Length: 90
Image 1 (tube, rainbow, N blue to C red):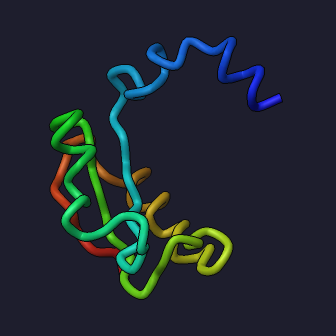
Image 2: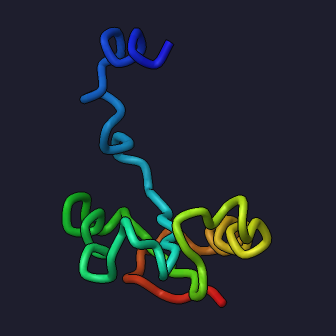
Image 3: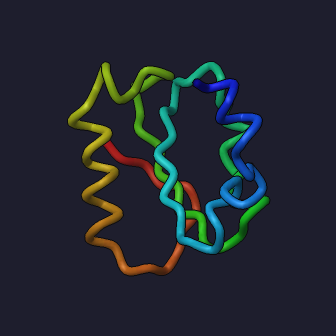
């Protein structure tokens, strides 16, 4: 099913999330997304990216620390649409 999807989907249409604002939750200890890469989405997509880092969290953030991941969701839903640079969620 995934292979068929790759061949059938117009990936370019969805790749950058169109023009929608994006809230990125970064697991601060993720070995696959190093600190020097944290600005990659903001560099590529500009002011519509808002990022927040969660300390003491790694690549499996959602299954390992679901409550902390949800804090990021709440933070986004209560925030004004103005973007910010990388902040920290405790």
